[in-house]
Image (tube, rainbow, N blue to C red):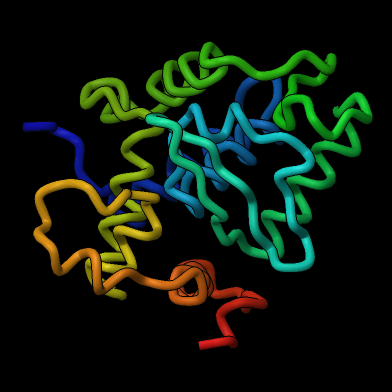
Length: 198
């Protein structure tokens, strides 16, 4: 079994603090931590984001992840503003290319994540010792969503398909996008335009 588990609030705050105050691009690193904490997306989903995958009116991003899965995922208005500002500042004007970029305009790669967690581990010994990574943020968010909003909402939040070992009941008790948005609003403390449609 995996040794990954949810990260507590205090330790998550420490991770955010180190990401925001160290390294050569704290704005980028803070954006990455927030993106993964809010959406529980995988690294591949973040790296595949394009400017055209942003729907600022409904505060949604279109994620394409492993196994060919894709979904619209709610994000907070604050995160949406930061994603749009990131594109305006670093993008090349093409809405079909990578959204997340280094300061010089090059698209991000998995190496940024490796360097980010290595640096956080230099400042927080427990991060290095336990080999904390981006996927731990996914565990953290989905654990919170499951506890606060139930299994069906956590499943939808994670982008899990209907296949798997949860029996035929999972086919009938799927959570809506509005329920996922409500969970996000609860998580972030920000209103979401789709959360009011429940």
